[in-house]
Length: 548
Image 1: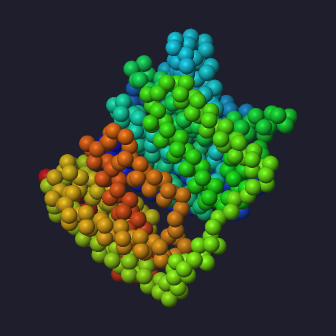
Image 2: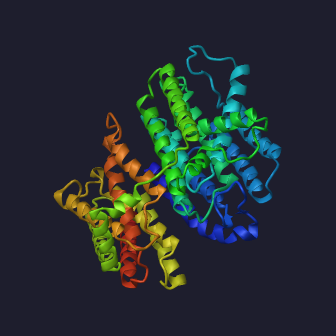
Image 3: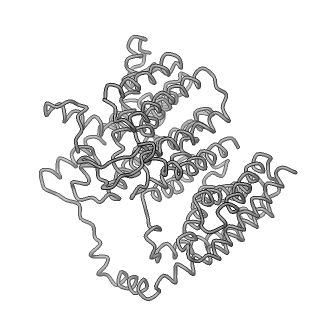
């Protein structure tokens, strides 16, 4: 239950904070002005890191006991976040930035005991006068690697989300509850942020966010793999964080070979190289997501393998990436899609005819059907759930109260991000309640199976024929779909007891149904159906949970 609430709280707080922070960015002078090295053309608020940190830290403080190790981690997060925000406002000299990073790292190493005790392919523990410097260099390197990777919309957040997902899964396998809860909290805040950061981004995380993520994921991966009681390979971090490590190493080596400072700015990162090869913004981010996904899946499958095997696989990956770019530079190869061929096909012609003839009616009908189906599902879950816990009831009551207060202030004229967040949470609650462990009569029955098949078909049709540019495939969708497909099919079915695969599959269908419903805001009655049903069901669940 704590994990569920940590994830939901982090996502909700992040989504709630970003819109007002965006409006305050110019006044606070935390905006990103484009220059020769950047791919965006307009001024963008880079204040998302504040929302990420607040969203992640709140559930950690709420559901975890703050001991020495945890206190040092939180203090280190605070230090690196403070210097990051300072840098976002003042564009600090790199030496001051490095000072802040070093202070944060020293806190977790000296006071928190986060130290590398064993190196890959070395059987003996290394002495402290070697382990401390190596740990400091590792954490500084990862912090800057994630920071430097923040060059395209959704890139740093998405790759870090994949790494954190793998860390959370491995922490679950090793029964490391504290590490699991921290990872889940940061995952929730990242997911809430990425809805605003997917191309074209409306907000950036800034150095405050990227350095926080780099520092956190570096500390977490050491806490996961450097425990004596854990059989995980000490080489596992090179796979979990493989792409940022390769990118930073490749760029710095090239700078030094050219006689420049390794910290001098340029456009030689992997994402810059992909753009230079003709990849679009979406395609470059998507390609990096695919590569990072392959690495984290390899890390999971090789978690108990020998250090030498893991290092050999990672070395092969690095050679393949470098060989690809070398071949492209020598041969003049450029990326070309097959969009022209698909447009000339019979299927493509038929789809264009449907788009032109239906004039958006197909999406409108699908959206109407999704509204009715979602209302029925919410009501059915609330009616059939045999038990609603006190925690769940309190969350539902709070959500209902927030929703009602917002309607009174806004007078129901528009469907705000606050309401969207409330509906997302209600979807998560409904999926959670419909798990087999809570005795819902609909679970794993032909009725529920048929319902989700119909809802998925409706969403798919509406998705395919939508004429609204706001409802298109983006890189965040890849992350969500990748998770839903991968987690239930991992070897050993490690999460089958908790029905996580079933829960995630339901969640993605419900979330995309909400997105479909909100594509046509001029259909006011449909939004009212969703709005009133959400408020009523949240209130109903709240009463059941509190009264008992």
